[in-house]
Image (tube, rainbow, N blue to C red; front, side, top):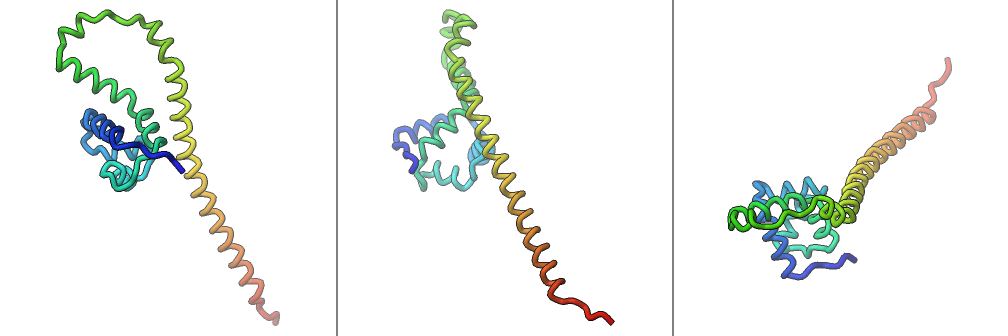
Length: 149
């Protein structure tokens, strides 16, 4: 059974979602994470407990957006202080984020594979149903032989 997050982390999640300034947050989160809209709505309203997995997937899917929102907030708060900060060497930044980027890409691949797998399962169910119908139709035809005359 998946672990659920506490109310403190739920409030942080809600604040992070607000910082994204999404026009339709439930629909956007649902689409990007490939999660049912009803579940997202129930999670955010507190009707269902949010699992660690959902939380992890959310932060993987919205990492770049949250970073951009954070930068926008910093710029609005004190643009002068940002101009005074020391620039980060690009190579150092790349080295420190390399493991995270690899993990993030891997997780996105898994999500895409889950989506593809569910589509394949639907197609297989349809094919199986069609095969059953065809089999039953052939069985009925064999049972009703026309007399030769």
